[in-house]
Length: 230
Image (tube, rainbow, N blue to C red; front, side, top):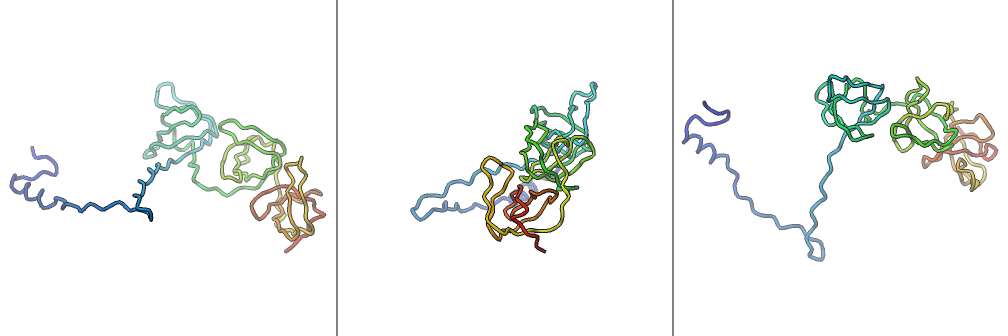
């Protein structure tokens, strides 16, 4: 039987092998710095691992041992996504198995927020949740249930209890500081600013407005220190 890719004749095969042999390469001297020391070998690049988040709860079939059960919000490393059932590593406990791909969403799929919300209280999240700091502003991606899917300013996503959040109605205007202001040491919600600093106003429903500074930080500022600008 003739093997795939083999030649039908010994002489022809030898000639073909000779034809495709790589020629000897001249070694290249390692690059050196100004002191004559050789450059170090570059660090090994770690492969990028795609992740997915569970959109719903799922209970694995008892008759199919590779399947994994999971809860909404859990995170997985995607090991193989070439079929409808993905092979994944479950971040919570390190187990591996298969899950239905239509029950999860890739974490690198950027979604536009439905609206923004402000944390009313601090919250220490579980592995599938996000932790909250009182006063921080979050993008709300899904508010269909009592636990909202949110994205923090740092980009991390997860679930948060909706009764810990207050929906913000963005007024759609900016404000400029009339005076300098130094935030109270014992109130982490307040932001300090200098005269002429400008802000995006996120909530102006009270005497203390929720604002976003030019550097991305959010907090509250006294409205009588600000003036609306167009």
